[in-house]
Length: 536
Ligand code: ADP
Image (cartoon, rainbow, N blue to C red; front, side, top):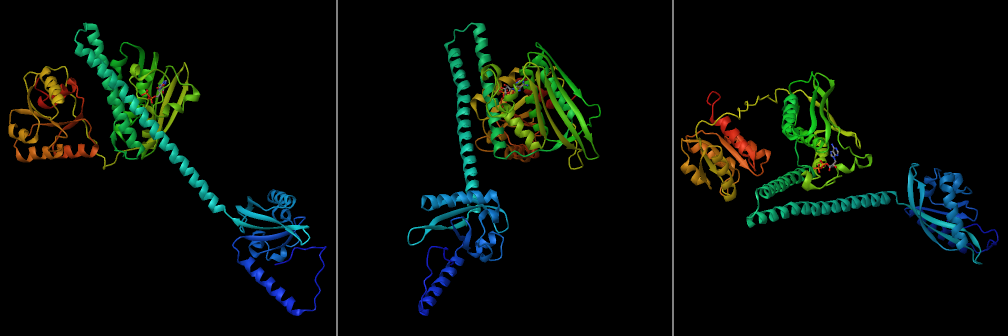
């Protein structure tokens, strides 16, 4: 190790060569130790000029050997940006006369930015006069990066934990509010002395609250599937023109008595079939149109389809839903896509869950489409999404749907139907609905009784998907394999996943519908499957 230069100190002059060689040996040992140290070791005079360093320090300074550094300052070696802060610390160490441990900016031997943990201390002679500084610096760039990554990961985990708790608390509140209303309304009904107007109001309110609960449960299920990445695309040929016309027809009764025109502007060259996920498309469009109708008092809602590009393989489609409604302030445009964010009103009057757009945004991302929103308060909003839809190939056969029956037809006889359902309340409801439309109902609550009473007079079977003793696909198989009867089987369930639905269809079911089932739907099914087209 080179000694700190002390101009005031006299060099010892000794004739004793043993002492000199002992000192040399000690010096060599110190040198070796310094070279062994993993970091940069250096010592400087009071003007910040290097007096010596180890090899690591020399490499970092971009020179061959420690000797090349001697006499140079940090600014000369590393420039002002890195050198000036180092000088400041060195001066502080000498001024205060105490050691400092700091993190400082530097470079690696490859001239890459680095962070060093440095310890610097003042050096004195025996008389206590300051001679300069010495220091050791370790490259802690990797450690700092890891610390930063860990901090970010921790913050993300904490934020997601907070979001989850907030989500659960909100769902809890959103479930309890309509449930409390329903219980209160049922109490009113039990009291029994309501006039016709109040009775109508009470039942309508119960219907609204339960419909809201159903929407909420469906939305939360979709939301959690999307959050956990369990939502898989179900691709098939989609007839966009039909889909959009269906959508318009669905909303027509809703706006009949309102001052709104619902228009469809579809590109004339739109191909008949394109490959897409019909379920997602329907969900997204339904949501946009239903919001447009909900938040427009007067004016126009337009569903516009533009073909932006067409190649041999795909068509780039932009679908926009434009309204002339209340609009959304610019600073709220991000907010409306957050769970449970509603800018106006409460659930009771609008029946919205505040999850609609959150789900839509995730569905659009799942499809791989891009979304745009433009809005001006008082003028209206346009929600649109653009995506490339391939033409379906032979892997996606186009199945034309059976034409829907003329629902105004009369039922000319009383079809006998078998209902397999274990829940007494659902039994009561389905029996009533089927009798109302003119059916004769045989009701059983288990698979064994169903197989025992099934006979050639039954024209249709309504089967609950999850009976206590058997699941739907297994019972359909049993019916088809152990009896000669081929009447259509319709699955009724509170919730069915795609896999189980396919299993039911493969086993021989013709359709699956979800509870609550409407009288109109049951009538439509009976007309469609129990009456051949020419029978009326
Ligand atoms: P909700 O189910 O309550 O309608 P959404 O997630 O679909 O929830 O929408 C969130 C909020 O965004 C709504 O409460 C409403 O304030 C606002 N919003 C959505 N669509 C429109 C629109 N077309 N015009 C004006 N405001 C809208």
